[in-house]
Length: 141
Image 1 (cartoon, rainbow, N blue to C red):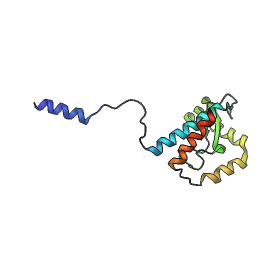
Image 2 (cartoon, rainbow, N blue to C red; image 1 turned 180 degrees about the vertical axis):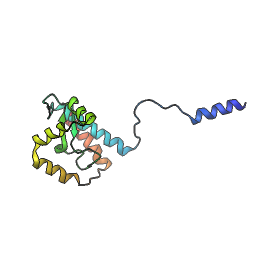
Image 3 (cartoon, rainbow, N blue to C red; image 1 turned 135 degrees about the horizontal axis):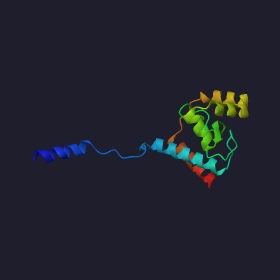
Image 4 (tube, rainbow, N blue to C red; image 1 turned 90 degrees about the horizontal axis):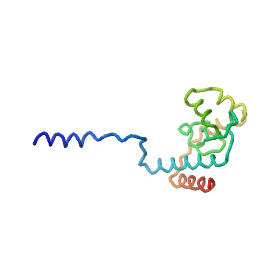
């Protein structure tokens, strides 16, 4: 009888870890992820070229990371169309040529604007995030 109680307690304590990515249950984070996905989908539909190599762009890269500036998260000036290859070169290898090419093509005026607006703190409300997701979803259809 003691063994069965022990087994039952072990089963309760040590639940198996489910494989895959853990998704947030936070409504704000969910809305933020949906808005990010809608933004990426919108730019994919546009059929832009990679700013570095000229191949078809599969995604848009945030020049200033999303975590570094909430103000520039959904700003078109901060978004750089890149192909998967160039994006991986930048993130996995840290290839400085990627940023150098973007800076060269966009210019010093753009870079100064990005740096100035990087410091502005913007906290999107839940409703604003939902509106952004809806807006970009409608545009990408």
